[in-house]
Length: 252
Image 1 (cartoon, one colour):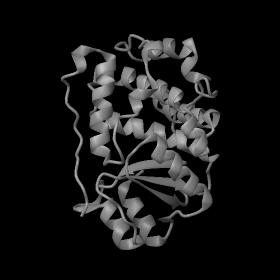
Image 2 (cartoon, rainbow, N blue to C red):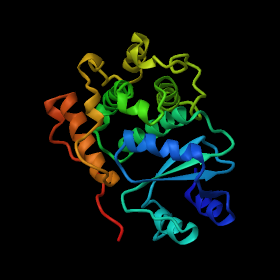
Image 3 (cartoon, rainbow, N blue to C red):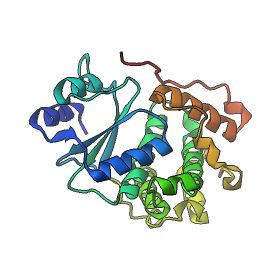
Image 4 (cartoon, rainbow, N blue to C red):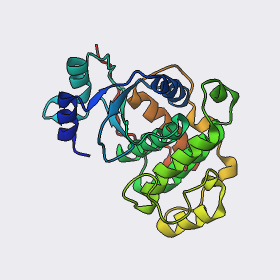
């Protein structure tokens, strides 16, 4: 997805603020999953069912997305927010889309350099396993999150990345078409073949608390630093001193 098209779609009204009932439910689920400021937008004709962008991504030189949304759509976009474009023509169940979004958020951590390259597969696997367990907590039932649908959405997102498919839900390996994909031994075998650095993290030792740092709502940069540190500690002491290339700031 090209950023200049995002700007064009905002100007032409193909991207707009989302305020329907499903959006409010999805927002509650995301706040429970990721204690980070976020903005949900409805989009038309996008190549992906959902896309996740940071508020400071530049749509043109020195023109960040957050400022465009504030000026063009009148939205309050705090610094450090992530922005979700949700295609109105290919929406799944709310919990499924929450899983898609969570997968894209995890992939953004990898793209931002939160983990060394040789640990990326293990880090992504550990975060996914933690979320898989986290959604069984009673608090998520109170926000209407359906664990099975969430896991299918997460599988679609991560499956596209791990299999090299063109988009979420396009995987043809047969490994990412069911809610229990993270519990299947075939997945670990597949990831070992895909990445020689992946030793097969011990899923039994991965806690749901890995993805739930203490504290209230914060910017994405702060959250990413906390998650990165927790995951590197989970993966082994040799990774604890690695840095995280993220930003932490606030829009006035």
